[in-house]
Amino acid sequence: MSRYTMGAFALVGILVGCGNDANAPGPFSGEVVHPELPPLPDVSGLTPLPDLNPDPHIVEVDLVARSHAVQLLPGEPTQLFNYNDQFPGPLLHARAGDRVIVHFKNELAEETVVHWHGLRISDQMDGSPVIQNPVQPGASFTYDFVVPDPGTFWYHTHLHQIQQLEYGLYGAIVVHERDFPVFSAERIFVGDDIRLRTTNNQISGFLTSGPDIGAGRVGNRLLSNGRIINGEGGEGPVTFTIPRGAIERWRFVLATNALSYGLRIRGADARVISTDGGLLPEAFPLDRVEIAPGQRYDFEVRPKPDATEIVLEALVLVLDENDNVVEAPFELARGTIEGEVVTPEPVYPKVSLPATSVEATPHEWKLSGGVVDGQVQFTINGVPSYVGEGHEHVLLDTFEPNVPVKITLSSNVSPRHPFHIHGQFFQILERGGKPVFEPGLRDTVEVRGNETATILTYFENHGRWMVHCHISEHSENGMMADIQVGTPVAAHAH
Ligand code: C2O
Ligand code: CU
Image (cartoon, rainbow, N blue to C red; front, side, top):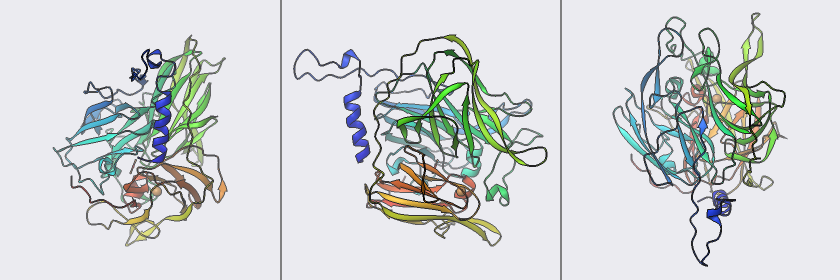
């Protein structure tokens, strides 16, 4: 187990059940006290997966992928691929340190795998197509792992991702801190976009060249928790009520194929409390944050004294009527202020991050692309790598575990690359060689066009891990290699 996780667990051991009488020392010396685990807080917005296992430390669930028709717009329902006939998929809800068992069944007419984005689990259970054979139509696979870190994560298909992700094969994961701060409410929002045909509401065809590959596929509709929020026939933002005096935790996951946007919250004093890899040592006020495909943020939200509503907005680049690129706000969620409560201040667990001012081995990953034989091809360090049939697959780098490494990622051509490393966390240190304030643990960093971004990681999790751009159109056209951390073990055949 990694150094960081050990630290987190040692802390948990001390803090769990704080302020809970059951945790007070027993009357008899030497008595081992097993504190009762408080129930997990509700997270509104998505339906949790029913836990089939009575053991409080095991979450055991059934997950099935299949086609599913959803009434997104008036008229014809849209044919999607979903988990458990829900869009987004159901919420996987656990506590740090829990064992999670997922009985997965593929009822699609095509192969798939499930990847647990951000969970630092064993590579054997990561749903990486480098290790796991595709789950064939009609076949099943049991994922079985321990969730080491608290935070907001997500799960999604990792095969034929351009199509399967656009078709809706994703869901959210919430792993609560063992000593979670208590809020008046927790909510989760998953953002997405989708390109629908105006004639029949079906997902429009996939182009294999042009801007859809160059920049990634962007939709004509925006979604918030599976509802279309913009344009004719859309349902509009997710709505709810919030009492004055509330202190809420809002979690946000971006599940688009390619679209990045800004996020802001109007009508509230909001703070950023968590990034991809969990709580920050210190929250900071939310003005706006930029979010890229695959990333997550949690916000602490308090209604402003004079507010009548609180609105979560996506700030998206669009074309205006004169075809100028402008930024426009889109409402993802709207809470109407109603009633009043008194909320005790949430008590955040103490968090410390791995040191960043350390000697670290420098590495470079150059993200690029070009046209080869009329086909757009993306590369890392000049080499295209694919996971899929008939293509070459590349081991990019090998790292020693628990040794700090500074990786400078660069994009020498215009597209952005939200770059993701499986099974590890890192911190963002610099952009263009200058220090930046983008605190917290991450698993995905947006590398903007003609820019460098420098990250620091300790590669704490042994195994063979994928590293790729999270724009599916880039990863599946060459920008998807893998790395080895520590000594390879014989690959299991699944
Ligand atoms: Cu969210 Cu390799 O992916
Ligand atoms: Cu990319």
